[in-house]
Image 1: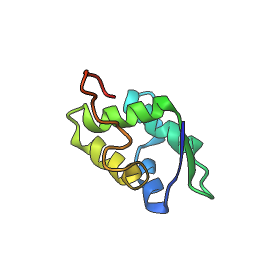
Image 2: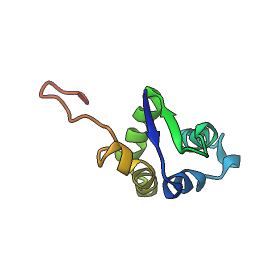
Image 3: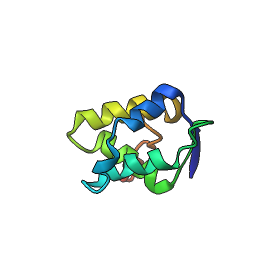
Length: 95
């Protein structure tokens, strides 16, 4: 798990996902779930290991460039340009 503190503009990126789409697939479910869990007064959001894996997968392993752009705007400052993804090891896998 990792705790991040999001700024108002970063929270706005999460809020771009319409909550009524929560059951339309994995990406909407992830975004709406984070909308519900964020502390809107402090910007604090606890990301589970599952959240981190999904953020990285939706940003880098899917063809939908919009997802990557949104996730980078929401988490690039706190998680870095790789959104916390570790470089692949010499022996294969994601680290």
